[in-house]
Image (tube, rainbow, N blue to C red):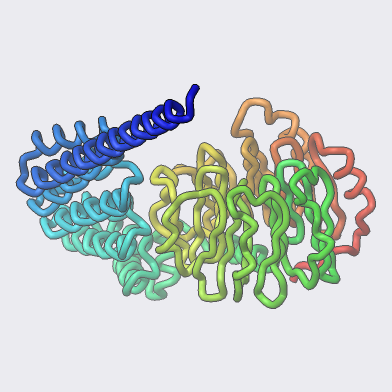
Length: 486
């Protein structure tokens, strides 16, 4: 080919390439402007309240690659419904948006407004229940108590004084609920001493009151956080503040040689926490969900774990959380401890009330001192030593000072050191049978297949099918290894 012909061919190919690029750019610009135009038209139609047109334009925009155009229209329609006072419609539409923008918060906002409207309409029972379902959003717990207090007053005014007493009693320490309950008890019983009157009205004898005091004393003396267990590893805190672990170490959950000056330990599925005497927390093990990101925690007085979560309670009762659970813990204050599973958590508060991230786990009233959470249910320990599940008393369990669980077994420790155990899932019979004969129990850490038990005399024992490395470790732990209960 001659040089001139080559030059012409090169120029021709270059022009073809430029024309193709120009065509591509023109197509892209046209499509982008079309998408942009459809989105703009969808939003304009939404602002005008022409929802059919808005959704039509949004559908065209999404067909051409504009993600969330329909969600944007639905969000604006939900806002419009809210502005017009259609709380139910707005709540339903916000709920349909899932995690889009702040839709979950807007759902709670709608629910709060519904509850407030019920309260203002003097539908107190419905308002109380609606506020309870929203806890810990905004001041829902306070509004729940406010509605309950008015219900108690109404009951008293109508002559239902026993019910009024019970309602006021459930509200303690809200406002002057305790004083109101005792005043009604004195009125109904004729007993001049308010405490005795209240005990009599509750059907409690002096012996029962003494039994409750003994349970309280046993709980106060009990040390916790000296042992912990994950899925297949255990953790032990020794008297001098150092920590040792044994079992599965696939994620580094047993790498605790650097833990020192520790006052409590906790374990998740494959991670380990240590609470230090200075109020900071150290962690090791699996960190897929950030459950070991606790280096900034300070002034902590309690630690605990879910499967893939870490929890801490500060001295002022506020909650610290790192890990898997995507829940709103912003209102979790005045806490003592937290019980958690793979899917939920329950917080125990100083006033004896409970908080939960799952609505079905909510427990009304107060008087709670502990909790245990599985993947399917939550259990709450009352100050009188009984256990409740969704406000129903569990079997005939009495005299308990602590509860704990694995995914398949619920355990309770009695004041006399004996264990109560209950199977939650098929296949737990082996572990239940192994737990049945345990006595002098001070602390228990339960996994899916075995339990580690610290006895009051300072010894450790294992129940169930534990890994060989765990059995060997426990066998060699001296009986004087632990701090003493006080």
